[in-house]
Length: 147
Ligand code: HEM
Image 1 (cartoon, rainbow, N blue to C red):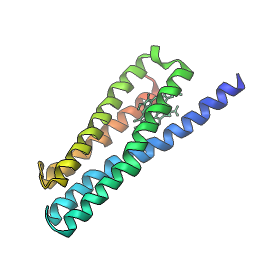
Image 2 (image 1 turned 180 degrees about the vertical axis):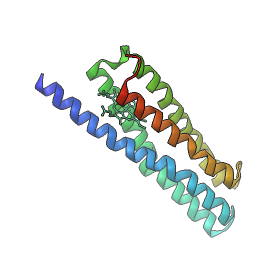
Image 3 (image 1 turned 90 degrees about the vertical axis):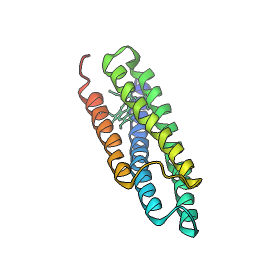
Image 4 (image 1 turned 120 degrees about the vertical axis):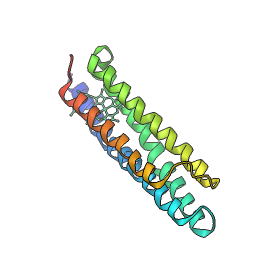
């Protein structure tokens, strides 16, 4: 019993640590896109920004996404969350964040090819997505409504 509660606490600590890394990356990448587009999509600065975006995705964003999911699902198993309505709602919002992550990775690829699909203003507005979604997720996980 004590082993299970220690496991729960360690999993939760790890989960929250990787959530912080993931969110930091999700906030940074569209900012990089704005500066990249302002510096132009040809020449040496284009190559530098493309490399920065690739590294942010490879070193922070993809590993953090994987760890948040692995530790989150392990936590859900330990506490039996799969039957609880707050968890279903949380999963819905986490899927929105995950889809946003994949969309950003796709945008980085098109920028690398020299295609800017959105204006800087639109990219700045996109930062509302992780902000609002993360706020809803934290409220769901702390208050556990409808359970
Ligand atoms: C990727 C899929 C995710 C799964 C499967 C998942 C699952 C879980 C589970 C089962 C718990 C334990 C809840 C409890 O002990 O009462 C938890 C805790 C937590 N999760 Fe997630 N989570 C995920 C993603 C996220 C994201 C994206 C965020 C924030 C943006 C987040 C924030 C938190 C926080 C702050 C806690 C700790 C709450 C507390 O103090 O009890 N999680 N998560």
